[in-house]
Image (cartoon, rainbow, N blue to C red; front, side, top):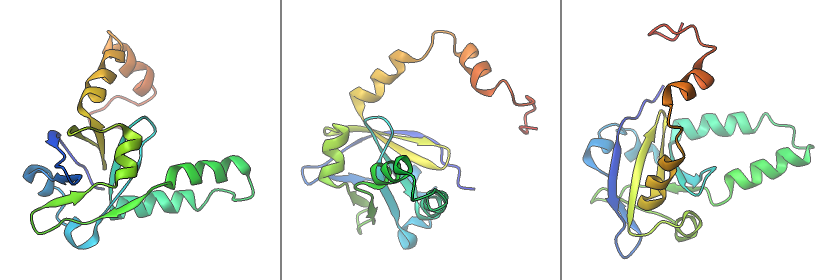
Length: 155
């Protein structure tokens, strides 16, 4: 399983290109040949997936019953604007303008690694979401993870 780590402050250039930080690029060696996929996140953000992770997500989507209207609506919304990204010789990717506009991303942005994917946020929006984190993070952890056995290995 891909496990990505880090949070990176970045800038978009005037042409909408993003320089992939070297520390992140090292974690994505296969991306130069296999590519990356970007699409809309569930909040006003974008998500970048390594190709193998995207393929697994699409495999899950393909199991949904296409005769169910909610399933079709979800797949349509989830895949809307999904675009393959490729690194140029300088290590940059061009973010699609329609997706940048959707997420309200300005020139300052944050790449936030979330397990096997990378969230792309406008810097101010990213900082603002942490205003909503409960004051007692331990209570949130118990609520979300409390049914796990609690061992360091997750068992």
